[in-house]
Amino acid sequence: MLSGSAARVVSELISVGAPLSWEALAQPLWPELDDRDALRRRWDICLVRLRARLRDAGIRPDLVRSSRLGLVELVLQAGDRVEDQS
Image (cartoon, rainbow, N blue to C red; front, top):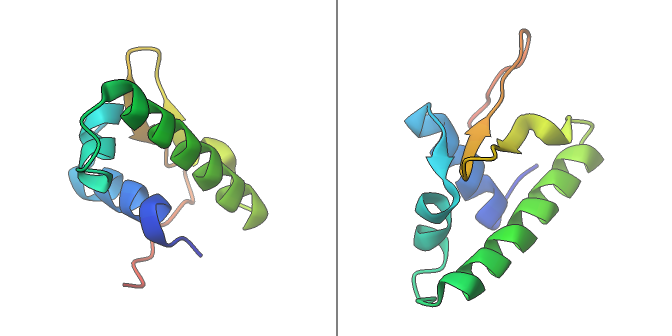
């Protein structure tokens, strides 16, 4: 269902088990970008695409949520399950 950058974001959030800064998630995805603004633009596009893929798969798009503190978290609710198909 998820692949590429979207899958890497979700996988990292699952493995850490805690909210992370958007920069901590974005920097490993695009190590060639040293401009923070360019990195943020790429991150924002990735997050929009991730949420669209979740929505298209019938999964609530707020599964991955940004806080107002610049942190990104995986929000699992009762009955949610994580399935690693790598």
